[in-house]
Image (cartoon, rainbow, N blue to C red; front, side, top):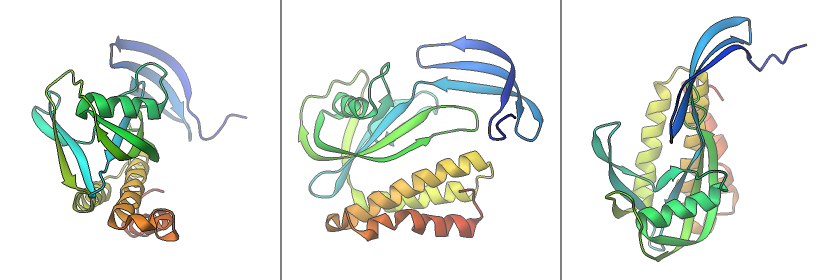
Length: 218
């Protein structure tokens, strides 16, 4: 008997293969007997780091992104190189883009960024115990410290607004994972003494209340 949670691929065609991603066009039969043509972006995965200093400030980088036609502020992030471990990739991207070395790295979340059409998996880390090394950017990057609590409040509010307007169940689940990670980090940065207590453990049920009220997929 076939697994009701998996799709059966009946035809496959790779239409593009590049350095960063590949594009497949597959004919599939999905759970419930739905037959469809799916365009899927294949990606090796990526890492991002919320680096916070001892004054409660988060490190952001500003760089030009051709895809959106503008310079944007981001967490230090990038693709995994080959089969490198996610933490190793996060440490590499952090020093390459900002010159910052972290004494401690903690995994906050692991999630699919855009599961509606892409298999990219992202690992989000929190870095602490920061010291300045030498940046090795391959492109122009401006690094800047922002107060983490206010930043995370804004990120959480923005993510919730995006989730409220999303109707695809897979994307809703992806938004939920990001919301939980942002809420957990916000609680820690608000008061680091609570890093290991139930207040931070409550991040997931707190987000689930918001998710439930909005009628989003869990």
